[in-house]
Image (cartoon, rainbow, N blue to C red; front, side, top):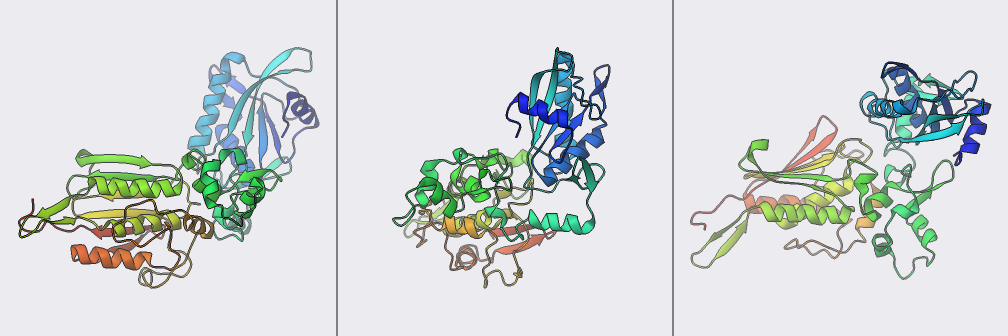
Length: 418
């Protein structure tokens, strides 16, 4: 949009519209006093809630005159903008801010700031409420419009969340080595056709080809660069308390989802104890069944709600238990009581892609050839193998209707262990 300065100047001369907002900047010393911070937040959020757009700072919105921003104050304005995006908008908004030198109407040169606001995956709230852009102005959304927008941008929409496009991405953000693993002998030989059929890329509302949520999660080297919560926070504690003073090991586990699954299992395997008794023959007993741990991590990664901003999977290891927290309520009409008897996939595309990934974990006792099993055997394996080892049945709990917590209890050291 307005790829060069000439195009941008022509649009400025025409004035504001649905995708262009003009603002003059006023200072008192080194402090920005105009536009008002809350009003600016409302404008940014309204644009992100509607469509991709541009806000230009340093232009009078009424006369279209390019007033500019003093070059020595550009960094002050940029810091002010980033503070608004991070602190005044929920969830925080990612924008591209560019400093431009442009000719003014008097034949001189002025410095302006261009803010590219992408259409967001999320619905953003600003200080005065929820806004959308209507023509050249913003409008607070009525409850029915807001409900519809939440539905459109959640996993409940007709196009599932894991099939939606990720703003600002392109096919070049996907690694061919990663997406080629999904190819079969009957797959299209043309790369773009194959990627579209697999729904790893798709056209956005403006017709631009973008990577999808599943494409980023499964076929980019660093999904967390595009979706900041797409990682596993793993922590091992000494003893039974969640206390930073007793932390033994910690790692933010990143990368494509199959790599996250592998590395999370390695984290547990590295940190759990293995008990051994010598008589009559040496018998080793691990704290946890790695087959059960593998199934639990796969379920957390495959079924979490990726539309919830700021919530990552948490894996916490204690001397007496393993806790895994997965963002999102239980999908569809499942309940805690029926979770072992029924199956329901929140992310159909992600689960189908994981079902094509070769097994990459040494989960002792597993009969899997591929990471994901779509027959619904995961939860029964978690329950039966963990209960057999520890004598206690694992527990599922739903926290605040927004996070699923699984507790797997550890096997206790037998008498006479090393």
